[in-house]
View 1 (cartoon, helix red, strand yellow):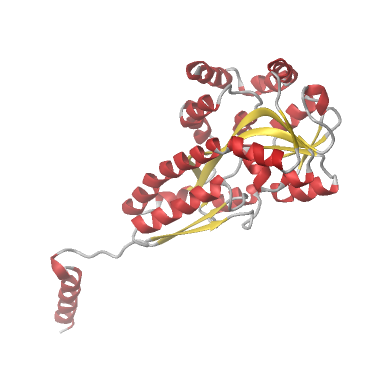
View 2 (view 1 turned 30 degrees about the horizontal axis):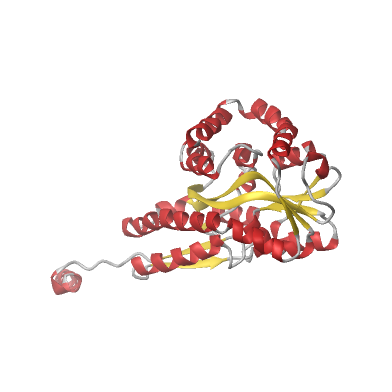
Length: 335
């Protein structure tokens, strides 16, 4: 009797599963929590919001995307750790914040490494991106690509910066990057690592006299309100790796993974296009706010390149010549 009952129940389940003439499977549902430190009006957040809409629609609601901007989930270092532990599925930190996992992540902090944004894009989408991705092995994280955080320039409240000597003695907020520390020391400045969420207050109170970020980020975070000068040194093309929990990503169903994989490149392309297109507009907005904006002459640009050579000497010694040669190859092909 028990055996008969089991058979009947199995037949009933099969009938339910095949109702309508086709097998019905339980869809895998998952939540993708994404944290970042930037404001909602930044290209990073805008592109992520569009990504959320597409992913939730294309997965028929099987993927729920939650976005935590403004460092509401923690600073970059804390969110990278949260991703590694699986508490957060994705974050977009500056590459320098990945240096604690492997100092070679500092390659994109090297000043004047690339001569154009095109060369930088080609490198991060090519061999240098692959080089960095491989450094994540064993950390519990993977990178799904790189969004663009703009070309970094210097602001401060003391004087305009036209040449390296103008940096001497200035207290510059930097992210916690050993490469940035050597760079600003080479320029004669006093580099001070400060968490991104604390930069505005540090500038306002004089704990730091200057900072360096792209025009879009400088304006979005209102740093221009507590700075007098913005100098277009354009010393670093900055990127944000899309750091993702490896177990979560590899545990996705084939359908859900396909949705993520299809939409990540779209999000990256949209974000980069916004960031590049709006650079000049944000420079003008900073100028319109009353901040004195100055460009760097070609002659003074060469002075900056020469002044930061100690960075190259130190890190070629540590990392080898090859990665720098690869960067130069991308500079040559982008010309």
